[in-house]
Image (cartoon, rainbow, N blue to C red; front, top):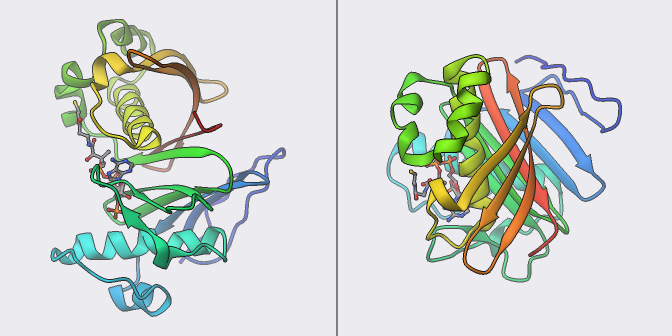
Length: 225
Ligand SMILES: CC(C)(COP(=O)(O)OP(=O)(O)OC[C@H]1O[C@@H](n2cnc3c(N)ncnc32)[C@H](O)[C@@H]1OP(=O)(O)O)[C@@H](O)C(=O)NCCC(=O)NCCS
């Protein structure tokens, strides 16, 4: 049990003496949180009696913790109405809320919004992400790695950003290299200027990133397309 103190004068941040690792109220309608999982599966299932279709015990725990965070952020979140698209994106058919979930090790993150499309990803920086970077990074994006300081940290931010954009898009069929483009990285504001590009759409996007202890967090929220 611990507190993780993140200060942000413009946006309300809630700190609790519990495994809530990070929480940020981005605006009136959009909130995110990261939970450090220390509880057994039953803890989450007592609150969120979801059908378990997953067999791997740790994946079950991550999945249940992700669902638990949704009504944690907005207590009227109707988690029982979640359906899974053919792309595996979970969503609410009436779009009462938009949401996105990510898990990594014993951490789970969720972002929920009343009115914006959202995407979130958490990653632990590791060298193997650098080894696969040519698979997901456009050649121009290697400039950020060259001038962005720590190789593993910068590559992880870019990977995590593309995972968050993939979830924000939600419809699958994405070439990470050419359709999800990072165009600028600002270490002071911890933001990324990016765009989603396909034949019909060129959508500029602003992403936010943080390093919270060992964890890399990236999220985005935007008006519906
Ligand atoms: C879907 C994907 C982004 C999940 O990422 P991951 O690192 O495996 O896992 P994370 O923990 O970050 O995210 C998992 C959550 O993403 C969500 N998710 C899964 N598919 C999704 C989709 N198509 N759209 C939005 N969200 C999705 C789910 O909520 C899932 O958690 P849950 O099943 O417990 O609810 C990942 O499988 C992926 O990248 N797929 C694209 C494959 C690809 O084209 N890769 C090219 C790389 S070069």
